[in-house]
Image (tube, rainbow, N blue to C red; front, side, top):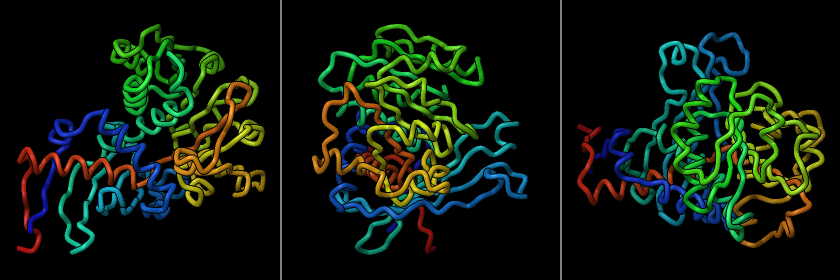
Amino acid sequence: MGTLLLSQKEIKSLITIKDAVESTERTFKCMGDGTTINPTKVHLDLGDSGNNLEFGGGMNAMPAYVGWQDIAGMKWVGGRFFKREELGMPYISGIILLLEPHLSEFISVMDGAYITNLRTGSQAAVIIKHLYGDRDYVRVGFFGAGMQCHTATAAIAEIIKISEVRVSDISQTAAEKYKNNMQHLVDGEIIICDNPEDVCDVDVIITVTAAPGPIVMNNWVKLGTTVIAMGSFQEIDIEYIMKSDAILVDHIDQTLHRGALKKAVAEGKIKEEDIFCTIGEWLNGAKSIGDIRNKRLMFVPIGTGAMDIALAGIAYKHALEKKLGFEFDFLK
């Protein structure tokens, strides 16, 4: 039994943004009902937290078993390496290994960067679908105009009309590139904001940055606004975290030690019992947020291996159907 090798170019031909949104929603629900197994990420610090290594990045090992596909696997992914930035290489580098769990055979090895960007953007779309799906449109603000901002916009446009986008990035070039690339998916205007506070005059604020400190302040966020913190860094003001009406996360153990909640937890300002529920539990109806018009909500989907493995599983099945990829026997 060989292992199917799939390039990024092949994967792009095998899965769509619609596949990503549907797969992400179903996997969230399976995480909520326990039919998906997802340990916390294992992080290899190669300089991204200020230790004595000069590489400036880090790698995550993200294993999972996805029940609805009966497939297992692991993503090995990282980013923010100084040398990659100097050479103009993409921020993220990743690979995904798929495992047939009954025989413990590695059935595929594929690029993981494209799948990472696609499923990250889809997380925001699934949340927005269930919060604002009864509306005609939604207004969105982005902090960070990179690839995951692009995929989030495409995923959101798949499920609801976007009447306006406000975006802020430390790179004016990146912001302008995003506007040029994504304007066709937005019914209204894409506004590049020089003042970051202006980004927050929207229905949903989404952060997709590597910011070392807070970039969304508590007094900028109005009632009825939802914050989705998708980065793995401290992008949200701790005061907002403490004063939000409900905090929902993708994975409780993981979000206590990574991403937006990490510092607040370390300082004893947020505890596990302060988390309202997981996104999967909410989607399954185990918990209800109620009327969101007078609430400030916070979602923290910093990413789980299950999302990647589920979408990679779809790519693998489509590759078999279309006879794409190269089969390699590692035992020979």
